Image 1 (spheres, one colour):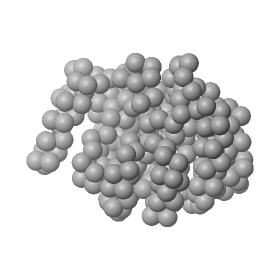
Image 2: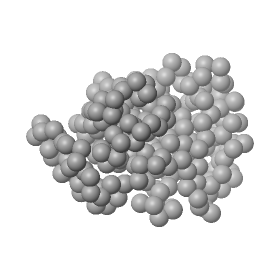
Image 3: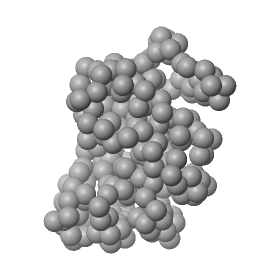
Image 4: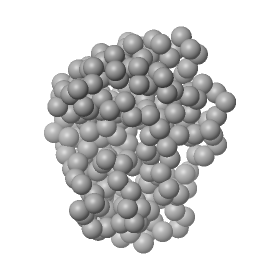
Length: 237
């Protein structure tokens, strides 16, 4: 991972110069492109992650809850949204949260070619870099889609794939804050990665569930970390 950071820094310089980056340029060494769902650890650590933002309404609400509780999180952002809301991107970064790549559009990756997926990843990377100066290390495919083309494109892009181990389905309009919080609390274990959304049709229930969840898990002795910090716990990074 440390060597990869150097490679990606060089890649960022090429992006800034307007040059394309051939997939082969990142071929040695490559990170594992098997998705990471969770880690095995005896320590009570969990990672909160948020997808599909930044959203002008719900991301600031979530950031306020996280700030009030001094909780770090990881935001897997869409490049198209990052381009629309660079100030919120700067807020996420300045607040000390980690930023991951969720692609540029929220496309159905089953319908894209390997080259199109690669371009989606690199466009998302460029948007994140432009708005925050951050070169993301982790990629989460929209919908968690894993096909041969997705894996090949991610491998060529040089990212680690981050999935999740707990999905409270907070994107569903049928899910109340109570349902969301309960589905997490009844399934939680050390090393879990929890999937939330800050972008969506109506994420007010997510915002409402978040405070209850933070309070409850802390009372059980859990500590909240970013994805990088979680991987540090297992020595994977």
